Structures are given as structure tokens and as C-alpha cells.
Length: 294
Image (cartoon, rainbow, N blue to C red; front, side, top):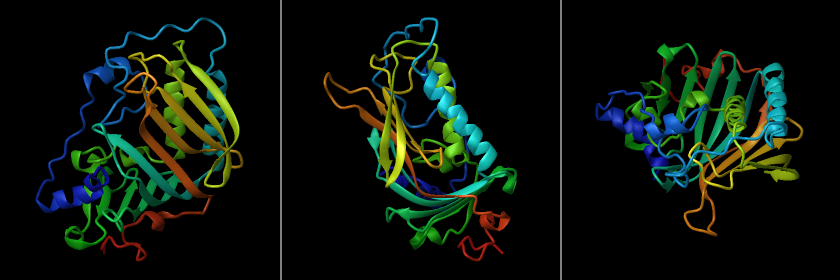
């Protein structure tokens, strides 16, 4: 399973001495066709392979303009008003054509310096794992340990966030986690897509995510074109917090009239902002954690 190849895999790999780190190579098709924004490893859209170039957008107002404006205002609010937050993060990703299990993590995230603490809640294959990353510390590495069993005996390992082991079973590195990074990447992709036509945008107020009232922004590229990163994407903006708390993206159906294929989905539940996190919240020596650091 994808989740079993995640941090559990990297800790087990370390036990076998597999600490050869390599930066991921991006497929040539992705580099040439898919514009800005972080490219996921382990699976790009396949429904547009062999498709022609997208049609240029006509001059004037673009369907994405309103969505871009919402994202810009949201990013400004995050940068100006949110120093840190905690959340339960739920993610599901398709990697190498296989849709993995849902993974559940308790997260603490601080914006300056960018810092992440993760405690894996499930499934059982990853439960109890902890990860810490702080920009500019630990030689730029993330620290991780398994939750229980033989893998836990390895102890804490230090890995480059984009190394093969750290990225095993993951579409994105830990350095891209969080609602601020999500908003930035969505803006990059939207600005790129504004060059092209064949884009439908709909706003659905009153949507709910885990009981939170949201506005759902749905973007659809109905015709496969090699320039597009998804067939359909939905962003759920929390009406109170004005941050994206859910994102989901789909590939084109494999057959006419079929259902779109989920590529990735991320949900931020139980978000609590401005907790006053300090360096201790992202320190492996914190006695509330189990990194075993002295």
C-alpha cells in the first residue's frame, strides 16, 4: 500500500543501510507540458497523454479571474494574520496508478521559520510515527521515527525532504505541507491556466467539510489537453477562517461517460490558528515526543 511505503518504509530502509539519497527526476513530459507549480511524483494525469495543445484564451475576462482573486485575498490573510495552526490532516494520493489508503496526521505548522511537526494517527501501518522539519535547521533535513515494532528500534533518522526515502509513497515533500503552500501552488497553476480556454469555473456556497461551512470553487477542463494538470479540481474555502481546508483533483475518465479518477485529496480538520507555538513545539528533544533525542 502507498501508506506502507511512506515513512515506515524510509525508517525500515535506513535500518538496512539504504541511506543513498537522490533528488527526484521529473518526467520530461511534465517539464515540457505542465507549466509552473510543484509537480507531484508518482503520478501525473494520464487522461491527457497524447492530447493536443490547449486552445489559447480569448482576450478579456477569464473564467478563472474570480477564483484567482479569492486565492490572492486568502493568501494575504494567511501571510498577514496566521502565525501558526494545528490541524488533523487527512490525505489520500494516487501513486503509480494505485490509489492509497487515507492517512491521518495531527499537525503543528508554523510559518516563520517554516516548521512542521507530524504525529501519524492511522492507518495502523504508520500509527505513532513522528516527523519534524524546521527550515534552516538540522542541515535542512527532516527527522523521523517509526511508531512501534521492529522499525521503531532504528530510532530517529535524518533525511533530505526530497530524497528517495523521504518521498517513498508521497506525492509531495513535507516542505510543501500546509494551507499557505497549497494556496500558493493553486495560484501558480491558475495563473498558468488563464492562458487557455476550455475552462469552466463554478462557485458553490454553503458546502460543508467536517461541519465547517465553506465555499467550494470547482474548476473543470472538459477537454483533455496536454497543458492541464487535472480534469476537475475542487477547493473548499472555510467561510470563517478564509483558508482552503480541502482540495481534491481528478484525472479524466478512462472511458466515455465514466467517472473522473481521484488523483489526490487533502483535508484540514479541526483547525486552530495562532496557538503561540515556540521552538519547543518543533524540537525533537521535547519530552512530549518520542524521538529519543538528548
